[in-house]
Amino acid sequence: MAKTRSQKETDVQSLVDLINGSKLSVLTDYRGLDVPAINELRSKLREAGISYKVSKNTLVKIALDQSNKEVTDKSILAGPMAIAFGQDEVEAAKIVVAFAKTNEALQIIGAIGEDGSVLSPAEVKALAALPSKHELTAQVVGTIAAPLSGFVRVLNANLTGLVYALNAVAESKQN
Image (cartoon, rainbow, N blue to C red):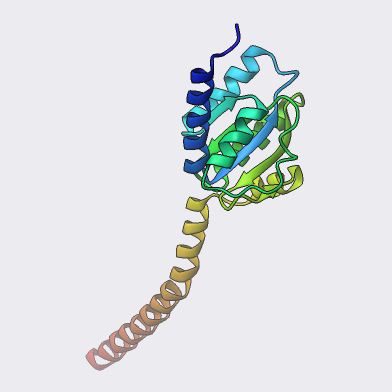
């Protein structure tokens, strides 16, 4: 049964909201995946708070025109596709790329970045290889803390040496 105009307008508005709220939209070709595999992908994405929508390209193009992202190259929107809308810069790419490694039927078409830039499949895979925001934060904190903890150990070693020296002098005077 064909959708009515009002249903399509509702779908477009939903897509506009998802596009505006996402930092990275990963485009995938889901042909060849069976229903259990798609449901598995959806559940993995849902656990991370990522929406995965199948929509007609014409509706996606209209939604992109109405969104706050300026996507100049819409040639990426060809063929049947599903879009993973991620609120994180790399989480959607990580999950989709990891799933595509175990399910060759899922093809990564590309992605649309927060600024409207279009990423190739190779760029999406490279983005997925980057550490997450939490991992990067931990690395920065560790890098900042390393010199400080080394400095504390050096000071502690000097004080420990002084205590041993004073102990030795005290023992020698007692004898």
